[in-house]
Image 1 (cartoon, rainbow, N blue to C red):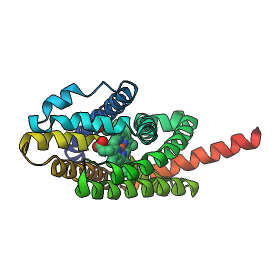
Image 2: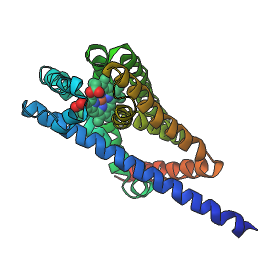
Image 3: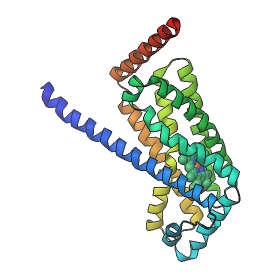
Image 4: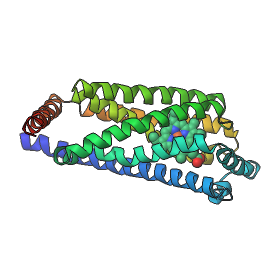
Length: 256
Ligand code: HEM
């Protein structure tokens, strides 16, 4: 009976984990490509996302150049956003690997500090972008303010939880923070889908909808994953391994 029940469960679990890893890998790759594309356009202002321009309806093609121009005339704000943002999305996936946490805890700690520090300029500059970026309109700005506030609150919660040595809460808030961060990639994917479904609607409406739907998708997926993995077994396992690491570290510190 147990074997009959556990086998399909194990398959579902493997499929879920595989789907999650592939989804995260795709979203991280999109975020990195966007960061590189934007950094490139700052270095070479002639670089204007030719493919992006071709995808837009003819009446909106000029927006590609105007958006490019806008970022070029705001280089400090753009760099404050994309440099720590790129660092965050590249480092963060390693933080969730239990293999890395158990073998290279020092890497996990240092990388965690870098991520928490990087998250502050990303979130703050994101909020400023939401206020001053002229192409999104109020619908996009409201989504950016909601996502930005949640993103900053999540990093503060994750940080204070680990100072209290509450590993379970720390993991949950870090997952939330990361889900909002890579939401920036699903925003772009949703934007492309909307362009296919409602190509004649105003750019402002499509941008606003893609921000709300894109951020919500990754945030809801993260909440689903948190609920799914909030079993007493995992919680206990996380608490025990964290306690062992803390005791080990304290012993090493006493010896040295
Ligand atoms: C942590 C991961 C993040 C990365 C890697 C990232 C990256 C980027 C990049 C590369 C751009 C320029 C887009 C382009 O070239 O078209 C951008 C724009 C922008 N980001 Fe972020 N971002 C992140 C998080 C956030 C967060 C949390 C917010 C919300 C507060 C945000 C708000 C914005 C806004 C409003 C813009 C301007 C509008 C746009 O280009 O879509 N970003 N981001």
